[in-house]
Image (tube, rainbow, N blue to C red):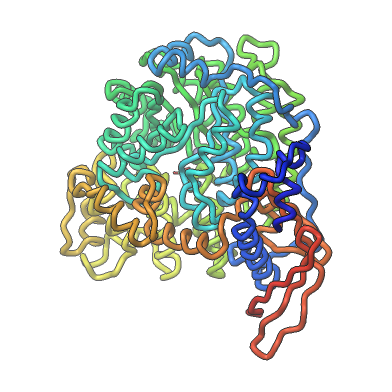
Length: 637
Ligand code: 3PY
Ligand code: ZN
């Protein structure tokens, strides 16, 4: 290893080595750490190769999966100048003037959701940073016309730690380094931040500040019941930061074209929009998380909003029904400022409509996006190859379905609930589950369903289906006579805030029994956390100083963060492993390369697997940078 270091040393390679090289370069002796990292990487690969990765549900590719090829035109020259993009405009103008710039743009501005919602909705949020980073620079150079990249927040924060053993903050900063020119956008669940329940106000505000300091530009803030008081703390924190954009989202549900669904009428949305404008939003988002906004409704809604409010309007939808590109085009015709779309191979079904096709459809019109087709199509080719690595997580329907208008499930929940039903042996009763989900929604008073309220509806739905009950049976029960799911009790007692019109009293009584409900803003009831005391406590657990990354990951998800740090202590940072190796281990004869530090490459080849010894342990034999290495792990099969 010492000689390897000397040979790799720049001074040595440049031919300027002298006898003092060894005295002046202490890093030449840093092979211990590298050796240690290599050992841990082999230990991980051995375990996954033998025992599988629990997150991949035992799936293993039949043969070696070739690395996804980054097309030649997407390989960016080292010295190439990064073209000017939306973030340069934001940094130059500041948030208020940036909003005016958006309003003055004639082209349809596009947010590419490939790095967040698309994979959240198609492959259970499992996309690794590795696959994004390989083309991130190309995104910056080849599609600088994009308005933003949605690449953080929503379910990505916990999933990164929970299933991918990645630090979400690292993802943000590493992508930022490669994409300095296009605005980054995140999804923020108001008082639930990037979690599933309410957090104290100072945690929400602190999280926003740390995210903005780490490179986030646009915060899309919503509440799962459209309860606007839950959005105030985050909105103010974004505005206070001074450089970031506060995009307030109103969740779209029901159908404004159906007069029977009068709870969520055009007037309802216009009033909410005016209210968030008064609250200080720089932009408005219509967040159609289930893909319910039909083309005519999209036109009508955007047309009204453009007349009634003065801030830019951003339209977010999902293609679950199969016709939502038409809604995007209708919104465009009505003058919407920005729309969310995903690169072709990552689009459609429960994901966003097709970016490449919508951009093509607008060519030569007054709303031409200016995006380059060859590049868009090459990105699509890349993502198509990458998607193959995520096969066990891909449970999105292959075609659009009008069933979504009945159950109204958000894109990200559909696949999850369907998966849950399958794993409980109830897959064949999906129609009944979908219908029950719709009935539970009516039982709760026809509410907005999006994380976390959608999860509560899902919990109640499965609770009823597994007990052979109907939603209509619930109001007839004696109050407190049944143990409903904790999430249902919490929501009906006001833990997520208030829906418009309040909770139906009869259902609330039955579910809560003798528990009391509140109509106060949940954040008002949650005591502030002593952040510095928490940091000190955390540091003593970690055995080192706790950074803001550690602090906020811990505050959001204490157990997930603890498991993640334990993983890191055991295996170190494995985010540089190619995706098939990370999920499925290696095949015999397979060779991979990993960059463990800048320019420090490990070349690993699995040569053979030995027999189990009496304790059930097996040796796996490798070549590591050409040298034989062995790693012994327990075979759990
Ligand atoms: C999330 O909260 O993660 C969502 O994507 C909601 O639509
Ligand atoms: Zn969405």
